[in-house]
View 1 (cartoon, rainbow, N blue to C red):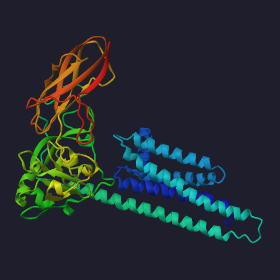
View 2: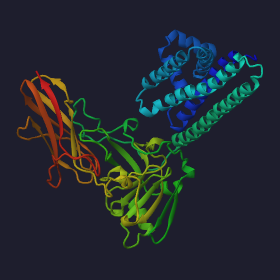
View 3: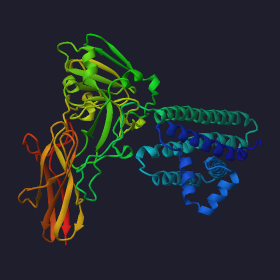
View 4: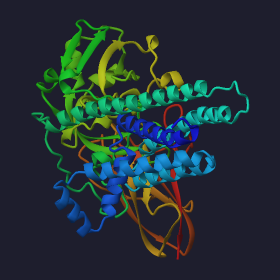
Length: 511
């Protein structure tokens, strides 16, 4: 096979291998549950008729995906070789083929339960790998072809042929490296997940939702947010995977004595538990970056008291395993609130994405100044001597949560029957509490809603009110009142630098 044309299928096969290897590595590094190939395999399984699926299980004596994945890889190898050959004369057709394959991967990913944009990253990485590698190999094949077609008797194809084989070898090495990286990363994730599943923490109890916390209106967020539905905001491109045996927290700085706590040291202490609502500073008015969970951990007040903060200290610089930092008011970590080093969420060890094995929870503060996932270092210091990740980007140094409320029923743009209409939603002001919620229709008088029960002032509260609405288009607003009698401001402010303000407003039609 000394003719250049014969090597185009190999170029396509190598480009395909690199794209798949890179997508596999990206999925493992980003902690996407399955690579695109596995997602496609699961999609095929879901669409397979029951009798066929049973035949496959009986025939291959296995219920896992290995046979199906292998079959998909064989088919892909044939397709990649064909696309390489096609690229020789019809480059656009080969590129179209790659886009179609990527589209199948996207479809498999987005039809999974609760997909996110991160889940699509491996597909994009794979597509880029296919295009770039085939372009590089095609360049050398075309040079080889030009030399072959040259009428110059001195032209020798050996030089360009050698470059193609060098490029092909480098491509194969990249594919192998991508597969190895994916394997190592997925193994690290697997080990962390295994240690998490096997972990039993004495003192951690299953959540029991208190009586009366729900207003019983369909469309209102569940009072307890499941772990999988809890919002996630962090800067970690690759989520740290730390085994509990490898975790250690160092507390130092302006203290009388430095402390180093292992995971075993931490969980031997008394476990505190409470319902706590968290919401992000970047949550816009009416947004959904908020959740309520049953958190279990060790209170920070006692731990910091052991370290003995020195006079003048007013801040704690927290650092995550991935290097992210936040500056937290020392007073908020040592007062009566349940600021804790959390080890469990809703009765289970923390999910990796939520900070396993240990994260910080501080009721009443936005997460950008308090909620350090994968926390490994706490330096007791002063605000005038530190900067942190988000404060360096223009966000406020202190981040107390602001009173807020939102309408969840009716939704914006809804059509409802005229007459009596149920309106409902949630309100929150952690570490202060909500005493009342009021709604207003079309600029009229404010009407009080009925509040559900709450176990403490650190959780959100559901509210409900029945309104009488005339036929036509309407505008509905909501505002909350805190336990000190202060009413939520209607002044509109952006999330930057310390949280959004304003009354959540929806428009609906009654008929």
